[in-house]
Length: 106
Image (cartoon, rainbow, N blue to C red; front, side, top):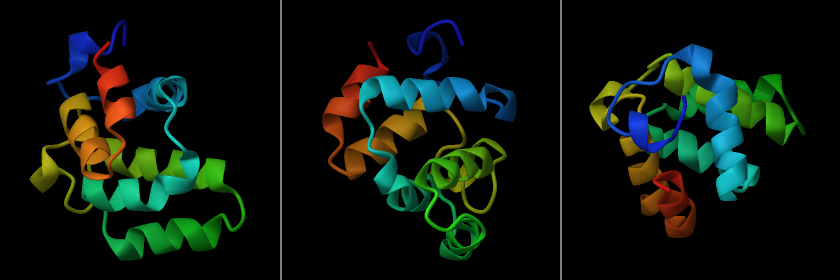
């Protein structure tokens, strides 16, 4: 992933997990909101509950697993636009994380 703009509409693969994590960190996304982000990206509550149960008190790992499931197009991800930066930006905006979403396109 050279720049975020070059892949706004194209699918992101699981191999880009670290790139997506780094991008969200650089843009200032709070990892504590991983669960809501997962829901808005199309992951099911039961999937997120399993992540939370498997990694209690490890928010960073929960965020990583959440994004991994999203990149793997689990649950209803495709009905929410798939695993791409457009759908990530839409999810962030729906969470009122507009500043983070705007930084994604810089």
